[in-house]
Image 1 (cartoon, rainbow, N blue to C red):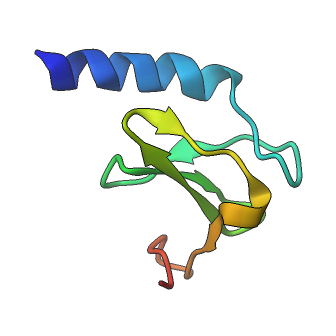
Image 2: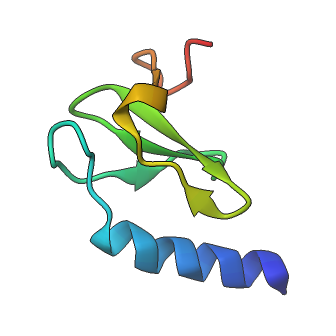
Length: 69
């Protein structure tokens, strides 16, 4: 039940979140553990259900959507 609530919360958060670098839309990655900006090709980490939306801490992603680190 807790996981289901986190997914719903993530959807609500994603509706109001944007990339701090380009101000574009973001999406949850396939594994549900990071937030992706397709325009900047960056992944923002989610720690304890809290998105860390700091451009300096974002990790570059490869074309297939996986973090390069």
